[in-house]
Image (cartoon, rainbow, N blue to C red):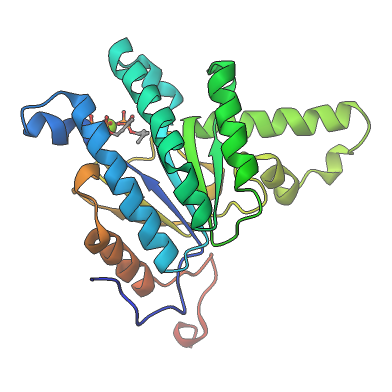
Length: 246
Ligand code: IPE
Ligand code: IPE
Ligand code: MG
């Protein structure tokens, strides 16, 4: 096993991953894009097990963006079916591994049946505390901020909150990721150097790790490399560290 056991001290608390490159992976093998999405589910399982093993507390995975509706209808429906079947197949093992599952994103567009299955999985696992697994489905970072602002505006309108009481914390608590939101390490596979409207507010001081590896090839070695890179980063949050402030 290639798990990096030795350095635990500076483990990222919240890791987010933009799981990109499924389509290209499949095309490179002469297959349809959906074949890559299926293979990507195995990488999700590897990433979750790795996060559990390394005691990462929050893992947020970008599974489907609101802009992904622009893809051919066949690919979109295949992606949604895969998401639902993976949820059905994995919910027991998620629960038995003491993982709390949360689906973040606009699920209102899904059928009642899908919404019920999501609620069931979230309810079943809500007291688990080894790992919080956020799956971003029909997610969009700007949408998330707008929804949070709308909730705050509603509170102001109803007289529960003064505009002056709006702070970083009050907005943070209204986002899909709720109060535990700051991302420590953001990984993107697939060789693109962009955020693609993933967690925008939450990545203010995240460390970024980009890799050309396509998502279905993502494994413990790559995750471990990302952690090692993270350990070497010096997070300054705008200040100067004592040893360089001479
Ligand atoms: C990521 O892989 C999965 C989703 C966006 C749903 P892609 O489907 O974007 O794969 P590439 O980037 O086209 O290779
Ligand atoms: C981002 O990947 C969305 C997910 C990984 C779910 P995309 O493949 O949709 O991003 P772009 O289009 O390359 O920016
Ligand atoms: Mg892509």
